[in-house]
Length: 201
Image (tube, rainbow, N blue to C red; front, top):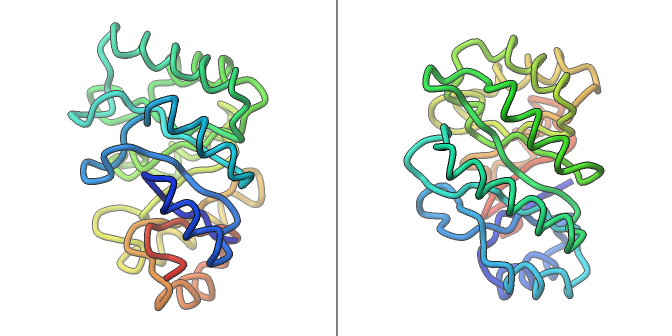
């Protein structure tokens, strides 16, 4: 199953034509993705493909200020009203650990929407411990490169995370996955979902 990361309607249309199963809509992909404008979300919903939307208000870090955290909550509320398939977010402490309090608040606010913990996960040193916390917080998916570099560099780490998850959460490899290497990564890790901007080309 393939999730394509996109930033425009034309990219969604291309992903659909190539057989994508879901899209993640972002703005500013050059800085890792920021929350897209609502008008773009509304246009994307009309294309009738499962739509996950990133909730990230700045690219400086994954530790929002109080004002930025309030903005994230407002965005999740708006996206829930639009009935998107899911939201993609992740809040870390200044020490790059899971911020349990803030993530729990956002997860509860998201309600029944699918919840993906994004690649902030890759900055965490103890990924095994972090995975257990993310599962307890009610996330459905964690998107990861497995660490520094890209998914190909960290196949063993991704494989170990999938083994640890035991079906309790979807561990979705991303980062440097293309149409040329996706089958190799899937075979090596056993991943059910994979994520990329060039995964369907």
